[in-house]
Length: 111
Image (tube, rainbow, N blue to C red; front, side, top):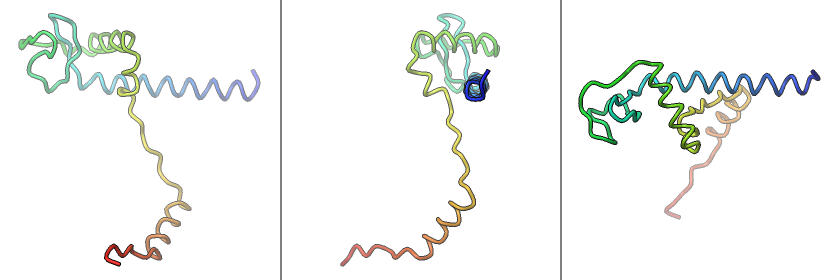
């Protein structure tokens, strides 16, 4: 493998692992309806699809399977499942922001 191919492979693998970890984190806040198999938020008292209000399945494997099935049927939901972690600003960017905040003149809206 060339260095460029190896780097792109490692990036895609890291992205896949990050999304898998985030799916498991999201699956921890969900539950599965035993009647219709819909994925519901943990805070819901009843299923939003079939109005079931009994005991829900909170088994991580079944919830993750139902979530994966949902994402296969509706791939546009993938973006809402993946959490974007903001990057920390570098020391230089923080210093420049500090300088700007001290020397920035306030806007006079009454002039």
